[in-house]
Length: 373
Image (cartoon, rainbow, N blue to C red; front, side, top):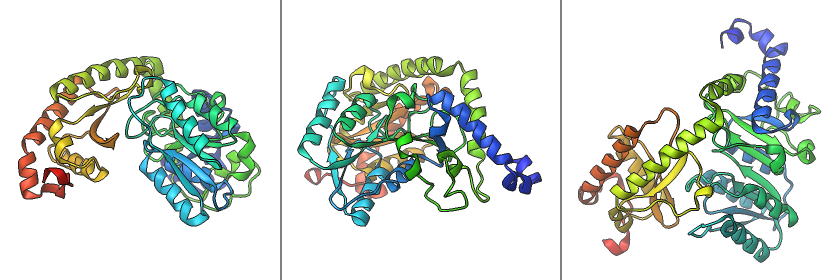
């Protein structure tokens, strides 16, 4: 930022940055239904979940509940805690089909009843690989009734769905601003329930670490480039200029439903089997054509290799390995048009035609199913 570079001492030493930071927090808090005193910025949702877990005192044998549809980095975070603090992992493998909220809630109820001693539940608001809009408030209440702390990974939520963080009343909530709310990359929110303010500090110990309030402890320190945080008010204004959340959601949801149906019919496959009200508005999953399901292991490695192949054709779509299949995870934002998805459709058909060559030549070293060799 020019103002910062023209006067770095005034910027870093004499609170110019602090005032802009506090204003950005205030405006973001209004958008996500938060008291400003409960909200701070972090670099991304992974930083938020790490910060939350780092603030909790674990004892050997404590259990952490997460699901098979969570973000891979979260599972690695939990695995690290197992090595470092001796906690036990409890992974709920969400089963399909999911026809109602009760289908999800009952699976959580079962795993909680079968695993005494769960201390923390890590719950996605919108699941990363499967784009399920979780019945979050009901799950938070269920966990709290059972004495379980809740950390919500809302990586895909801000700017994607309406939020009222005070009403949700999780213990911790984190979500990216740079995914759906137009901020530059490296910007996320971290909401902390007042009960936990005193135990939460940034991961890096620095000058503000012992400040009295939560917000003061997270005000950017030293010479970090915090531009992504400070332009959040501009991102909010741009979001509003497009019509606001209701208009954007209606446009994206309606367009994406038609696109998902078209691709499923073209590929002779299926849309992920969910109740409509549990589908994330801006995201949808369509199963890859049967030849991919028959020949290739549904693995993260294969999904990455398929993305690499498409990227080489100047087309990109995210692939997910979830529920025993490989899926194309589609996203719709205001800059996407119908023709974008026709390119995805045709590129997948082209990749399907090249499968024999891929196998014969070992292209990208795909993991083949042993039964098909």
